[in-house]
Image 1 (tube, rainbow, N blue to C red):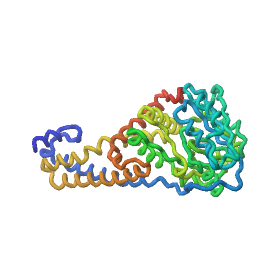
Image 2: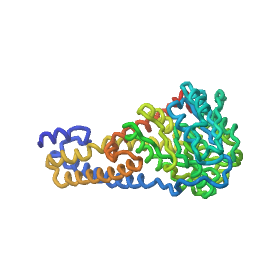
Image 3: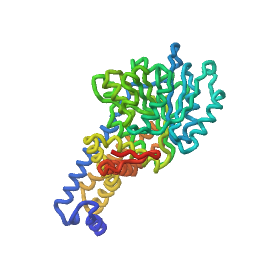
Image 4: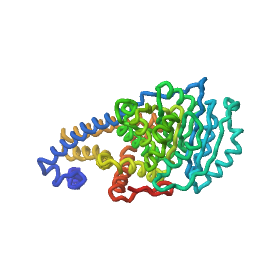
Length: 425
């Protein structure tokens, strides 16, 4: 066994230039590095898993007695998979006074045909509660993208131009709501004196790769954006979730609407900044009980989508670019080091490492127990098996690859492609 141990520790994998048995410094160096990794890892792990503070929670609420007209605006580009379920859910709202406006943003799939059929079927889709005041379904076709506009802001701008409501509700086509969602969000918006009210939606995870990668991505996002800071009117922090935004029409008009952020790819963050920085009340809340979203269904979709999102978040801020590069490197190290850490200690112990090797094994295993515990809590919250906590190194490796690929796209100026449109610096 000692021969095997010597051969293992000759490998660059462990960073030792000589065998442990023939070296005085290498075992101590590894022992110190292992201790530093353990202490730093526990601190970072605890910090990362305690940043998601959504103090305002949307609970199911009955329809309001005073119900101003709300215009639900849904942009759809190549959304044949989702558009029917999204629109049907909106038509089934118990909110008594709404119109639903859907824009087909020059789709190349069956989106428009599905929407056309929905207009013919809409009467039969209405719930009994809303039948007396049926929501109006309006389908419009998007125009060519003008110079200087990004795709989604232009689509949202067009839907808002057709809206008649006192409130505008912008909803992505891959977002599905309960029948009480609009009533509940409107009630909470009034309660919190919000001019713009946005929610974090429950993320539906279906495929293996979704369950491996997206929980880690959501944890990373919670570190970057603090809901408590966003909801504090004395701070400049502003963010919104474009999957569901409810905004007063007067506020929308006062800030210049989506035309004021027409060239912004991350349009939800840009419009949130316009709202808050102009003195209006911005609220972000937990809306997981009333809304669900499924962003991607496969690894290629996730790679394209999250690489695009990360790229867009990094490209305009040098500090975020540096943080993203560092974060990608840390995730890569974690993906590589976590599996071999306890194995290294075991080989060392079997080769005569004594108490130092035993301590490394204990620290490695304790760290794994803590990590699995935290990741299992995240998995249960997302309604997936706790066993996916054990895929953390795999997910970290993929997340690191997306971070580093996005960073390279920023540095190289190559940009990204999303739904047939190229976005570059």
